[in-house]
Image (cartoon, rainbow, N blue to C red; front, top):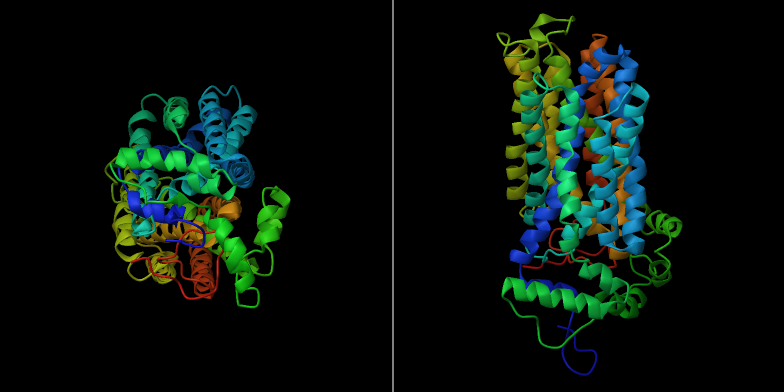
Length: 493
């Protein structure tokens, strides 16, 4: 509790702890989860529609890969753009923009009359999907500090739900109704997010950092009423203002990663926000996070695409890489193997929840990077169908764990004024990995260079693990704030 002025005062973090995680945050979780489900489903589509579209329009392998690549190119642009919009105009503005673009382009792509229109619309879908970090930042800013890691892992389960739903839809829809129906049905979660947008509140953290303390207090009163809790006695003060008035001056000569007060004031400009992220105090963290996000996306989407390629009975390199379901027809083989490996994300999510608040973010990520690489390495040589599926299952289980925790760590490490943009740009760099990954997974494996593809994925995974070790801070137990210091983390327990 702060008492620097007349009468008792409290910060937003203290208010969130007082009202706890209740029914109000559950709604926020479900709504943000719709965005995550939408992103997962639109990405998982790429595992199913390639061959059908290729056959319909007589495409080359490069043209087939482009359908995947343009989605990630759009996500690259969208992640930065939505982050800047969200930091400048508010989280709700970002949420609305993302839902509009994703739902509209997703549905229209089902009616594409030719390949060029499909590529353009899938690019726009990617732009919309780039708004995933907006949902993450918005949800995170409603969560009390205690057990925040666990709740962020719970949030990440919506992505896994989306992958399982899409695998199930692909299995049911593609053989019967075709890829156009799959594209149309996969846009439903984005339309649901658009439909319920009117119920979404603005982030009180965003309001506080922009001096709208009264509006933030009104939202916190609603949170308290819905959760049947009471706010602390006194006046809500903007924590950022308190930090700017004291902590910046006190730590001017200390080893600090906090941007200056001047940086905070001008952070609503997209260009100046990038300068803050690359300033001397944040550069190391930002660059290392970029490597981690690149490696996560490159390896995660690579494993998904490896699953579809290595389980295909069209694989002419070695029959031992065929699926364990040889007795099924080719379509069933693909859908079953993708479905099985999608289920791997559930134990990965559970493991993340168990360890993220116990051993910390950094050690959790490093451990799972190493284990994921361990499962991937045996695929340097051809394995039996059952073993191939099992190894891909294990690799995906651990890589989704690192993916999950990196999306917890990044919002925690950045100040509120640049949080959405910082996570958005890191996510954009990850999309570059997603763009390159299909070229590796599809081209190398198709050309019978499985060992080279696996070694490349393993090398990127290990580089990502090393980058995590070099990150300067552990964020376990730290409050969300407008400064990020290099001091030892403060426990909230």
